[in-house]
Every structure is written in C-alpha cells, then in structure tokens.
Image (cartoon, chains in turn purple, cyan):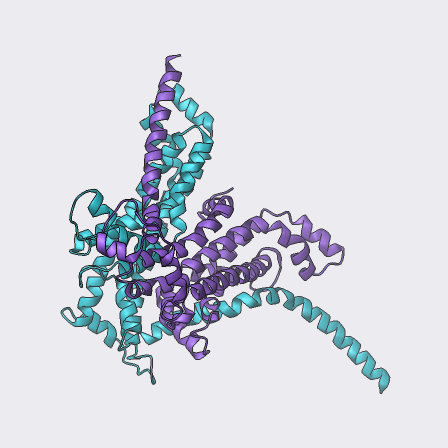
Length: 281
Length: 303
C-alpha cells in the first residue's frame, strides 16, 4: 500500500506545520503573561529576557490598588454589566420583534420589515454624532445605560431570528391559538424554547460586541469610573508608561474573561459564525 | 338609564377586545421600534442635517448650506488635507488588510480541512480562532509591547532594531499584522464549514476523473465558497473603511497613520469640536461605503 504511506507522511508534515503555526500564534499571549509576572524594576533595568528570573504577582496588586486613574476592577464590573444586559435585552427585544414579523398578520408587516432591511445599508458612522447628542440630551452620558440603549435598535439580529423562525413549524402556533392561548403565552411558552439555538448565537455575538466596542464608550463615557475594560485599556498606556509589567497585567486581566467565556461557549460561537454568514446549518 | 349604560359598556367592551387584538402585533414590535426610531432612523437624518451646519456641540447650529463640503473639496485647505489624507490611509489599510483577511483564512481553512484527524483539526481551529475574540485594545497593547523597540520580543529575538512607529510603512506592517492575528479566525471558520459541507462523493468523483489537488481546489472547493468569500469581502471592506481602533491605539508618526474615522473622531470630539465639519466627513465616508457595498452586492448577484 504505497498510497497509505504517502498519506501518513503528508498528514504528519501537515500536522507538524500547523502545530508550529499554532505555537507561534500563542507566543504573543505567552509573552504578555510572562511580562506581567516580571517586576517593573527588573524590566527597566535588565530589558528583554525570554523567561523572567524573578516571578512576582506585584503587578496585579498594583493594578487593583490603583482605583483612581485606572479602576480596573470597576471597568471589569462595568463591562460585565453592559455586556450581559446588552445581550439579554437584545435577545428579548429582537425575539419579540422577529416573532411578530414572521408569525403575525398585521397591516404594514412587509413594508415595515423591508424598511428595516433598508436601514441596514446606512453606514453607522453618520449616526455617531447624533446619537452622542441624543444620549446627552437624555442626560445619560457617563452612565452604563448609554452603552446599552443605542444598540437595541439594531436590525441584523431581528433578521437572523426571523430567518430561523421559518424553520419552526407553524402548526405549533395554530395548535396553541386554537387551545385558547394568547400570543403572549404562545411566544413565551412555545416559540421561545424553540428559538434557543439562534438566541444563544445572538446573545453571544451581542455580548462580545459590547465587550469589545471601543469608539462609542470612548466618546460617551469619559470619566475613569464609567469606562469599560476595552475603552479603559485605551488610556492605561499613558498611565503605566514606564511600568510595562503592570501594563501587561492589565492586558492579561482584559483578556482572561473573554478567553474563559470562549472555552465554555466555543461550540455555540463557532456555530453562530457560520450561521451569521448566511449559510444554512 | 342603567340598562342603557350597561349595553353601551358591553358594546364598548366588544370593540375594545377587537381593537386590542389588532394592536397586539404592534406591542411585540414596539420595544424595538422605539429604539430603532431614536437610534437608527432619526440620527441618519439628523446627521445629514448637522453636516449642513456649523454646529460645535454647544449653542444653536447655524445652517450654512454646503460650506463644510465646499471646504473639504477646496484642495489645500486644512480640512481638505485632513480628510483626504485620512481617506488615503483608510484606503491603504483597506486594500492591503482586506484581501489578506480573506486570503489567509482561506489557506488556513484548506489546510485544516486536509487534516483528517478531526480532534487535532478542532484543536488547531480553536487556537487560531481564540485570538479573534480579544478586544482591539487588548490586541494592540500586546503588539505594542511585542514590537517594542528596546525590550520587545521581536527585535530581541531576531536581533534587529526596527522602530515600528518610525515610518508609515512599518507602522502599517505592524497594524496589518495585528489585524491578521486577531482577525483571520472568523473567516477561517466560515470557510472551513463551507468546505466541510461539500459532499465527499464529489471529491472522490473528481479524484477518479484524475483531478489533482490543485484542480480539485479550483474546480470544486473555490466555486462552492463563492458566497462566503463575497460575504467576507463585503464585511471586510465595510470594516476597513470604518477602521479606527488599531491605528488610533497603535499610533505612529504624525501624518502617517490617521484614518478618516480618526479625523471624524478628532473633529467631533476633540478640544474645539466642529461637529458640522465632522458630520460632513461622516456623510462623505458613508456615501463611499454605500457605493462600494452596492457595487459588491451587484457583483455577488451577477455571479
């Protein structure tokens, strides 16, 4: 069997090559962690070393002790609150709306939905300044609500959930309605459980988008205490300029929560990516 | 009197019930429509309006017709220089980063698919995708330190002395590298799942017909990826024109890396806000993005 031998060799080469790539891929992360464990004095005195000779967790202590200019613990809490609430509210609001567009008869259904789709073409950059003014006129700047509310008007998720609902049998609705259930009951008791897979996807995407957003939180919340992890990180470079160890400790703190979430929800995330790219599952 | 009142209220009740039933769908839509109206529809029109004013975020905006646009197109003016330099940098990013962010994931997906051991394949996929969920701030801070001139890993490991913030080319090389590191994962997964959905029998048939690996790729794999490829290209280009975080956080020599979004941010929210001018720039950028997306959608449809 000459072919099998060739097959094993080519597989071995391929796997080795990809393993090297994956190793290199992780080097920046490892270097970040290693630097965060070095004392700042050591870095400033000795410069570059591959592996730190002295290991310390001081940098993490410094980070959490600075509650004035870089309240990282507060940023983490803010990010968690904003991302979770964004995800929950987006899921609920989009699911309600998508259900109506997909399953209910009312005047203007098609027209309204076409209008929603049309607005997806609007480049978001035009809305930036007006949304800033709107939030300010509501006196919501420097609050966490400012980081959540503007994104609840999005259309993409409604579109995704509506597409998904076409795969949920309509007989469910009819049976429930004949049994005398109202639309509210039908939605929460029967349709919502059916939508869980797509709602997971929408929720996760919204969570990560909120967590990673930079420009909007940078503009609307400028007090140190009201920043998110991502927008806060953009100002720490100046604060810990000569303390690269501490700077990397902050960076580690920003990376760990999402990486941990990633470990647990990888499956859904990967399914969601193929789903949102418009392919069928 | 009493009897009449009762019957009237009964009729009212019946009407109300019918009325309520007709409203129910709108109640489902209402939460979204409120936010949609306030944060999607209204700002679109208001943004265009502001671009015709000299609004500075304080006081009342004064309508000045096309003045902002005229200034942007008065070549040699400060605003014109800023806008077109920004557009130039944005284009540099878009034409270099976007093709790479489609091409590199394609190569990775093909290589991963060639690995027959699914467990190993999944491990590699998880590692290559893991960096895609990090925020732009995290990624830029990591790379800033990695590429640090004195103490960074790159310069010390390869025994070179490269100042990645020293000139425009190096700055863009750094920005595009970090964009790739944190950006190829998503497209890679899209492509990999499209490739996986091609029936194996088609590959076997092609092999039996004597098609080699390259022929199979160009005749079978690539055509089946047309939709996801176009999707990635469109989202990539839109993202490219909106690029802000990477250059804003990485920095570089003044005048070598500022993108349109950075100019808009600077004009709108800088020390002396010129929201009117920033809005005019936003509208122009918006028009460019819209035109490019329409062209791309057309191309996708024709195929």
